[in-house]
Length: 423
Image 1: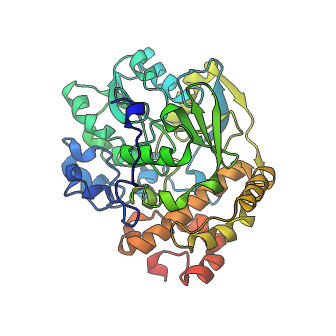
Image 2: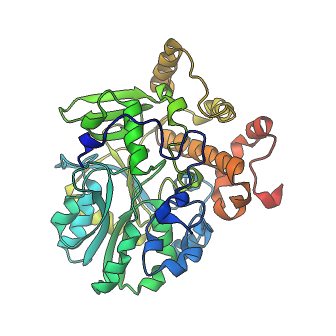
Image 3: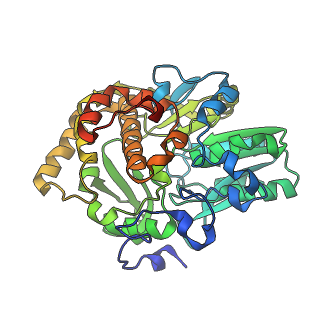
């Protein structure tokens, strides 16, 4: 079925506006943990290792960082961004027109195969006849990687292809994926018996099941069936590029949250690794200026990966403007409002949106702001819906990153921003 055929009137998210969006309640996922992002591990021969690998059973970021880096995060930007050796603003000199941005991620994956550094790349393409329905792909040629260009913001069980990796005797593997997938992959890395592994991380937040993605686009766009790419941009607007080349923009504050409550899975609202901190290299956009991508080389392997693509890159400057702390008290107050609370009047929303663009945080400060907001929102969600999971799901660095807002949070929610064992 084509994307245009699948866009039809719906009554609401597949999980229901008043329900907790638990993927594990879906028939195919019965028996899995209540929090599930359908990473695919449970569909593979490594399913018995799920309890030791799943980020929603036990977050192992602290231990995995020690294994990858020999240390944990410093008390600086690493609290928000994860451990990194270098960060860059970059874009391809010759952009791929089919890519969400310029195509750095797929160009790098293709380069690994061109050079024979890996034998295959595990990644995600789009299902036949759709633009956004995720389809796991085990690419064996550069062309197969390049064909997966473009964002697929729906859940992808890509780790189920670890069966094919084993069956085909692949020993040098490239992997492109989201943070929950990467966490599981790192946790079972020794079980894969690989000779080499390159991990390219994609920042990820608020992924959805495909039916809920269709519903989401119907609520936010004038022409959902013609959207080619969309992204939550650094100017506090959702940009939606259409088939005719036009770009539709919607202010974050104008989102119809009364209609969107229930769209996002509980697992994604209980995730604390937007920046994909356990990858070798993370390729996103949040910390860069409009038109550029934000690249963090995290490991020695990641630095090598960046150098492989450097000749094809135009490099820019990373900047940082504004003060994220000014908006955080208001954000915390908004968290205390009931889901789907009535929006401010139209003219008030337009004024707020204008002030956000003119005076709001930019560059790296924008990234810090968004990451801290996601950490706050998700910690608050977890406490309200799955309080008993907090000790094993929330990684150590979250509390340190949010410590500056402890007083405001405690006044609003009558509990501190500290780990359970410290309360």
